[in-house]
Image (tube, rainbow, N blue to C red):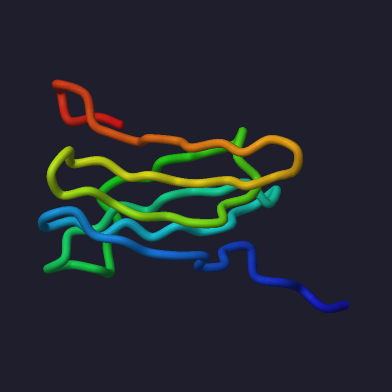
Length: 90
């Protein structure tokens, strides 16, 4: 029996001193692992995106300190903005 990896890196982006790695996780939904650029081994946070099953583009904005994820599915397209709140939580 062949076992497939549960985490597949889809894309990555950076905002200031953080790197965001978009992965397809267990159950095939998307997760974003947040790492400091000076320590890519240990994740600081995990942003789970269970309602999103496809990402066609993933990018960041250093001006507004947020991530953008684009999902293009016919007939609907979606743009998701991921940002931190006042307490620096996603």
